[in-house]
Length: 230
Image 1 (cartoon, rainbow, N blue to C red):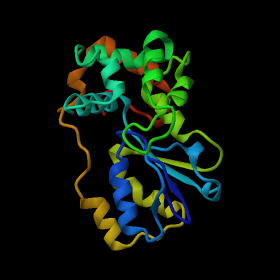
Image 2 (cartoon, rainbow, N blue to C red):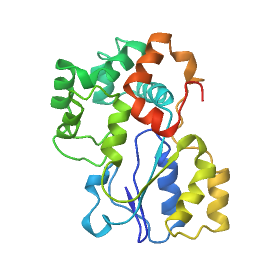
Image 3 (cartoon, rainbow, N blue to C red):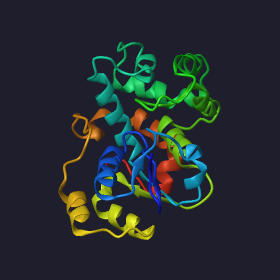
Image 4 (cartoon, rainbow, N blue to C red):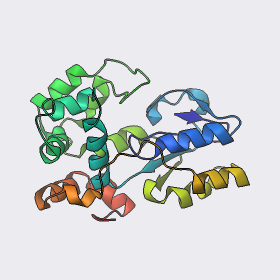
């Protein structure tokens, strides 16, 4: 979470937030990082009335990026370990477990118990009690994260990660920040951060898994006009 005198930036997982965090801390003089992957509900009172900015990505792309990033880690996080049965499952089975968390019992129980009981400001930074809201929702994990991070009163500007380089400047201008030439050049030219190596995401899906994402993550897909293959 980045706070300034004019706006707050919320970092939704695997959705371009690392790039924006670095950009704001470098070019916005009063920008301060006060937490990592903290949701809107955790904005301190003195900044709570400010407009909030965030990014979203195509859910089909998100699951591939998340899996590829965790699978290559020597010590993947607890979410990956539980959903993949400690690496015994491949992409399709692991992501299917992830998509079914909102309607399941034992796996969700195990994950809630394994997550920390409080915010840690590192890694996933998702306490077990926060994940409890997923139970019985029948939404996908990415749609859960989206709601968890962004829901709340007040103004929220959400850009699409895929168009971040063209949408970030108008977002900043809309909340009263003057965007100079150096910041514009950084947004346009600086390489992306934390890019997972996985090729085209469409190659990882069979028809059944593709349709399951479409059902479970319909809230994000429909709100932001995503299509498979975008």
